[in-house]
Image (cartoon, rainbow, N blue to C red):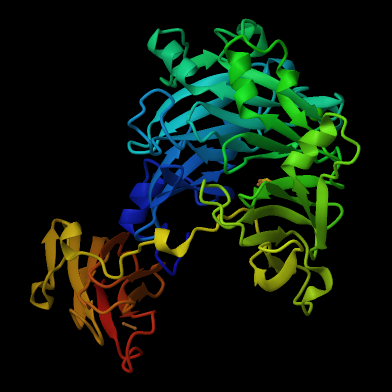
Length: 540
Ligand code: K7E
Ligand code: CUA
Ligand code: CA
């Protein structure tokens, strides 16, 4: 719920969020982690952003022209939806060089279906990798996987998606998740999975109609028909990121002081049966420092990895790392380090997740601020720090506070962001197009109040309803000036939202308290902003 924009309060936002049969919002909690854009030709097209909700297993689509969520999809059969990434082109159709899928990793394994069976037998739980259609926002398919999935990355040719796995042990307790020396990065052959689904080699789980294919190692022994490929990486890795040239995936060690570089072409070779062992796809494994988590790239052959335990960003060179891996003792992968304050989680470079990586900036989202700021209570704000990576040495150039706890972001070049400044009145079928149209309509005990706002006036100075009425207020902001937003609040009725210029929103509530209620504008709009009010009169 956000009472500035009215998210979770207006009927329009409730329709996006989903409601229970009694009309209340289904979930008003969330736990977003990662944000990624839609692509065309390997770079951002400025159309959509996609964000995961780990707690309820939902994916939200944000329109980049309004920066508002327009769809939310709840994915069946999963818990702990952590990693998310859009595809960058179609694996089969050459003409589709833009995003049509968003891939969703699933971290917590559960009984399938999760209806009370197998509660005490974690060995029977399993996870699903999910593909959602970016236009319809319907779930296309799911793939059964061994182990959990953490972060997700996709290839530039559209052929592969992958997820790092820290719990290939399928452990239920943290010590169990650390029992193996190696976990994995699991790769998905997108075209093969979709062909298997087309061929009907799928099953369903519980009430869900989503087709599921089997991507467990036992079901995928023959590389030439396998849907998945598990590349072993050291102990409990975290984060997987692809280099802007599309050639390498970097998996961070977390419990190992290493990064593992996996070659895209080699994974494809394994799927074609030309490579014996998935381990041969690993082309470098440099020691880079303690607690590596996430990696950004500069497009000049260097990687920048956050080191949670060392509180540093380490810059390492991909070619040098590959030479060292082949035994060249003179090759030094690590080229620079810089302290950050403190304990970085995500780190990302400007345009770094596109083929237009510009090598200008790296941002470190730090999990602790400790002594950076005056103490403001037990909970501290955190800091994000900006590093200039254009030269040989990294240089700290900016720092600002963030809401705890800063997680993930992308840096999008400004010409890719084209937002609209004013809404279009005609986009809202229920718009009240003229102040003269303001009125109260009654059908039985259902009352609709048509209102406009235009600084400093709300279209009706007062309106009367009866106790027990179901009241719907439809409010159009007739102002046409950019950023001239009005709010609308009703005391004691839990109503507060804004309408942007030329936008229409509505709320519905029961008039259960008689009396006078001053509806007022909550968003500073005019010298007479405080005077901008109306009265709701509720008769006994
Ligand atoms: Cu590294 Cu949720 Cu992005 Cu946390 S995962 S840092
Ligand atoms: Cu309208 Cu303040
Ligand atoms: Ca493990």
